[in-house]
Structures are given as C-alpha cells and as structure tokens.
Amino acid sequence: MPGVVKLFGEHAVVYGRPAIAAAIDRGTWATCTASDRLTVEVSGHSARLVYNAEGGSVEARGAEGFLSYVSTALRLARDTWGPLRAAIRLEGDFPPGAGVATSAGAVVAVLATYAACRGARLDRGELARLAHMVELEVQGAASPMDTWVATHGGVVKLRASPFSAEPIETSVDAYVVVLFPRRGTTGQIVADVKRLVGSRRSASAVLDAIGAVVEEAEACLRAGDAECVGQLMYINNWLLGALGVVDAEAVSLIERARPYIYGGKISGAGRGGAVLLLPRDFNTVKVLVGHMPHYVVKVDRGGVRVI
Ligand code: MEV
Image (tube, rainbow, N blue to C red; front, side, top):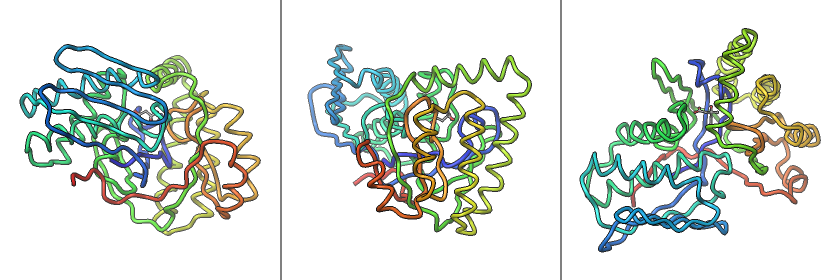
C-alpha cells in the first residue's frame, strides 16, 4: 500500500476545494496467515500493536493511535466480506502517525488483506469507499484524498464533493520527505481549522486562494515545469500558515533548503509531521536534512497490490 504525500490543497479539500496528492513508493506492507482467531499486528519503528478482534484485547506500544482505525476497519470488513480467522501483520516504512497517510495506509492494508484472505475480488473503488468510511468514523472529518490515492496510486487531482478524481501525468515525480514530531492528531488539527473557518470570514478567502493554487499547479505538473511547481509549493505553504498549521521549524527548514530546492511545503495536516521538498540538487538536500528522519520518494503508479 503506497504512502501518500499531499502536493497541494490539504485542509482546503475538506471544504470542497480541489487538491492534488501523490502515492509514493514507500508505505505499508501486509501479510495474512491462517490462525484460529482474528488478530492484527502492527510493528516496526519500535512501535507495536497487537489487536485480538474476538476478545478485544490489545497490546500496544507507540502505535496506540492505530487502534481505533484497525478495530473500525475490521468491523466494516466483517460486515462486507463475512467473518475471518487469520493473523494479519502490517509493517510500515514510516513510523505510525508520521503525517504521510500512515493511518490511511493501515486502513487500506487491513481491508485489502482481509478481502484477499477471504478470497474476495479486489475492487479498488469499494476499498477506497470503505477506507474513507473508517477515517470519517474515527476522525470525525476527513476527505477521501488519502484513502483514494493510497488505493489507486499515481498523482491525482480530486474533489471531495461532488467526488471526482482525475489522474495527472507528470515528470515532476521525485521529492524528499522530512519528518518532524507531530503536535496533535490529524483529527484535532482539522477541528482547529474548522473552528477558524467557522469564526473568521477571511479564512474562507484563504481556502479559495489554495483552490486557485491547485488549479495552477495542475497545469505546471502536466507541463513538467518543476520551477513553477516549486513556486506554488511556497505559496501553498504560506497559505497553510495563515490557517495556523505551519510551525516555525518547517519554515526554517524550507528557508535553509531554499538554494537547493524548487520549492517546499508541509504535506498533510501540519503542526510537525511531514515537510515535502522538491530538490534541484538531491545530494545537497540529503546532506542538509541528514540529521533528521528523511526519505527520498518517487511517485508510485500502482496503488494497492495483492501478491
Ligand atoms: C490529511 O492528510 C489531509 C487533510 O486535508 C485532512 C483530509 O483531507 O482529510 C488535512
């Protein structure tokens, strides 16, 4: 299951504006083996969660945030495909809650593995729909962006309502993701933005401006114009700053990297989490961020795969 980076339009997408996200070649891996009961084990990055679906027992260290996603996904999976006894194991390239759609990846992974184990046909549309229902139930507010892109792969321009998803062919397809400790969950940060949008009329103008950036960015991506994509990443980042989700650390990193990148922005809910850089010079950027968790990522065009 690929991870997902948000190239343009996060937060505004929750309010009906378009957004562009990309599936990346790092994400979540899942296996399923026969067992006398249904368990889900999430491990890696010194985090571990073992959930015994029948007894409801849980053993968690560092991955507690996944529990409600996993248990909700299992309930919807059982309602959709019938009961299953199996041991599902998930392992991720990114630490849980990193801000790279790890929860969407885990949900899609649990659902796809459950369906495959039950011998059900892989229907990406249904997977994406169920995974979005899980995120909605757990987070309260969530656009279908992360779950749709993790399921289908590629670079996608989408709108939440009325729902539309349009693939974008682009040669601008390699980035560096730098991870910062998160302050708050996606649900909490989305709720803070909702309060701001509900109380200040000007915040809606910021959302409109983000929508305009997305439209312009689509053309730049299709043209393979990295200079233009980078400039719009800077603009999108300042607009996200106006919504209160960009920390000083992210701004400082992007400014230090400025000579070596086309552009940079936070990617996802913000307040720590992922910063996305579009490098001119990968080697210098890698040295610059060497002391922080970072990943060179390329666009994944395959989406969810069952092997
Ligand atoms: C989170 O990855 C992206 C947000 O736009 C929330 C959402 O789309 O559900 C902040």
